[in-house]
Amino acid sequence: MMSIRHLRSWILLLFLICTAVLNFSLSDPDSHLVRKKFLMKQKVRRMFYHAYDNYMKYAFPHDELKPLTKTFTDSLSELGNLRLEHLPQNYNGSALTLIESLSSLVILGNNTEFVRAVLWLSENLTFDVDARVNLFECNIRVLGGLVSAHMLATDSRNRFSQGTYKNQLLILAEDLGRRFLPAFSTPTGLPYAWINLKYGVMENETTETSTSGSGSLILEMGALSRLTGDPQYEAAALRALRKLWSLRSSLNLLGTTLDVVTGKWIEYSSGIGAGVDSFYEYLAKAYILFGKDEYWRLFQSAYVAVQKHFRHGPWYHEADMRTGHATYWQLTSLQAFWPGLQVLVGDVAAANSSHREFFKVWKKFGVLPERYLLDHQILHPTEKYYPLRPELVESTFYLYQATKDPWYLEVGESIANSLNLYTKVNGGFASVRDVSTMVLEDHQHSFFLAETCKYLYLLYDDSFLLDQNYIFTTEGHPLPVLAAWHDRLPEVYTSNYTFLQRSNLVRRTSAMSMQICPAITVSTNNNKKGDQKRESLCHVADARSDHRCLSDEDCGVDATSCRRRSCSIAGYCGLWLFV
Image (cartoon, rainbow, N blue to C red; front, top):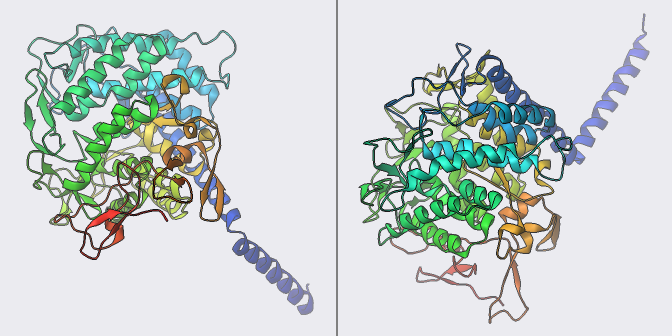
C-alpha cells in the first residue's frame, strides 16, 4: 500500500504538471485556437458526411434526401414552384445533391469521391428531360455546380489521372446553357422564370419573374462563355442585367417582381431579402470575376441607395422603390447574406453590426426563422421555418477572414451545435418546420451540402483558399479569379500572398483575405506624404433619415474616392483630408 508521504508526493507532482499545462495554455493562446479549429473542422466534416452518405444511400441518383423517412424527392422541378404547378410525370431526378456536393468534396480534400462522382455524372447525367424548372434555381445549383467542378477538375492539382477527364462536365454545362437560351427570347431581354429543359418555354407560361431571377445569372453564364468561347451565354445574361437596371426608380431602387414581356413592375416593395438579394451580390462579384468597371459603377449606385433607403441602424427594412418609404419591418433569413457581401467590398464595421443582430435572433430561437417581425419582435405567423439555410454562417466566415476575431469561431461553433442538436436525425439533417416548437420537416436541401457545411468548414480550415482567389456564387460554388478573364486585373487579386500594413503591424493574409480587403492606393492632392493604402474598395455611411450625422462613425468612407469622412459640428459629413 502507498504511504501517505508517497501519496502526497504524487499529488504534488500532479498539481505541478496541471499548473504547467494550464500556464502553457494561457501563455500560448494560438495553440488553443489551433486545437479549437482542428476539433471544429472534424465536427463539421462529420456533419457533411452524415448528410452526404445518407443521401447517397437513400436518395441518389434522385435530387434530394428526405431524411426522416429515408427516401427521396425529385425536387428540381419544385424549386421556386410554391404552388407545385406543372410537375413532370416522368422525371426521375438529376442527382442534384451530388452536383451540389462536388466542390465541397474538393474543399474537404476528398479527391477520390470527387473523381468518382464526376465520372458517374459524365456517363449518366442528361438534361433531355420533360421537366419545367426554375431558370434561376437551375442556373445557380446545376449550371454553377457543373462549371465550378469543371474548373476544379482541370486546375493544376491533377485530381484525375492523365486522360481520364475530358471536359465532360463542361460539355454537360454547355448543353444545359443552350437549353436556357430560349427563355431570353422576350421583347425586353428579361428571361422567363420557367423553362422546360426538353421543349423550351411552354405555351401560356407565366411572364412574372423576380429581380433575382433575371439579374443573377451573370456569374455562371459568364463563366460558361469564357470556358467555351461562345459569347451568347454571357451576352444574354448581361442584356437582362442591363435592362433590369434601366427599369430602376429615380432612387436607384428596384422592386421585387416584374413582367418579362412589358417590363412593368408588379411588386414595388423591395429590400435586400427574397426576390432581390443576389442581384446586389452578383454586381459586386461580377466586377471581381470579370473586371468590368460597369459592374462596379452599378453596384456603387445600388449600394448607396440601399444604405440610404433600407438601412435603419443595424437592420434593413423593406421600402417602396418609388418613394423610399418603409413598407415591411422584418428580418428575413435570406438577408443574413448581406454582412458577407459588405465584407467583400470592405464595409466591415457595418457588416459586423448587422451580423451581431442576426446572431442574437439565432440564439433566441436556436436557429434563424424565415421571417421575424422587427416592429413587433415576434415570429411571422406563418413563415416560422428554418430550411437549413447557410446565409448566417456564410457571413460569419467572411467576417472571420477579414478580422481574424476568434469570436466568429465561437459563432460558428454555436451554429454547428444547434444544427446537430435540433436538425440532425438518423437519416441526415432535416429542415425545421416551426422554430418555436422545433418540429422537423422531411427535407434535406441540397444547399446544406453546397453551402452550410462548406462555409462552416472553411471557417475552421481555409487552406483551400491559400493559393488561389475565388469568388463564391450565391449557391457557394467557387469560381477562380483568373487574369485571363479580365481586361485589367488589380495585382492584389492575382498574387498568391501579400503583406498589408496596419499601423506598425504587418501580417500575412490568405488569398480570401486579400480578395475581401484588397489593398488599394488612394491618391489625393492633399496628401503630402505620398499615396495612402486602404484595405477597402468602398465604405458608405449609414444615411440617417434626416441625412445628419452624430459622430464620425455615421459618415464612413466616401463611396467614390474611398476617402474617410468626418462629422462636422453642424452635423454634416464631409471628406477627411490626409495630412
